[in-house]
Length: 137
Image (cartoon, rainbow, N blue to C red; front, side, top):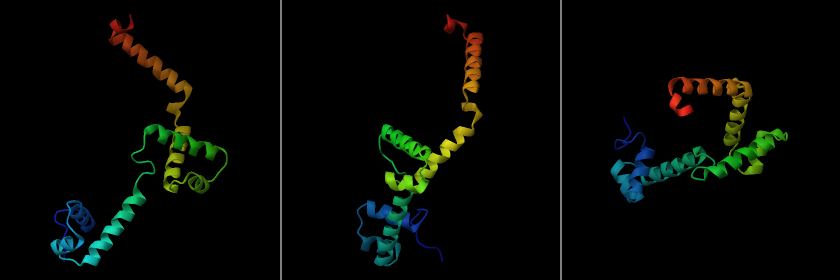
């Protein structure tokens, strides 16, 4: 038997939406045909999952995010483990691992080498001169 979701993808999403609309837990339970304790349990579980999956610096200015990423990279280069960095900075381990993943990608990406950038810049300038000579006067 299908669980009532009121058109939402999950019961948790339906509960969150109904509570946001101002319904009480009892009203939500009556609307969905489930117990109040189920509503409360799903609400708490949903909040826990949402908090765990939220980015470490969501809603913060980009400058702060950049500083945090720089700090992760500095600590990694100083020889600290990912777990130690997460603990020292007070951020989730998944965030540290994501930043370290970016570092690994760019260190092996040949498109980021000085030679590749120089060649790409020269090619771009040649194309601009060829197609838009008025911009190169």
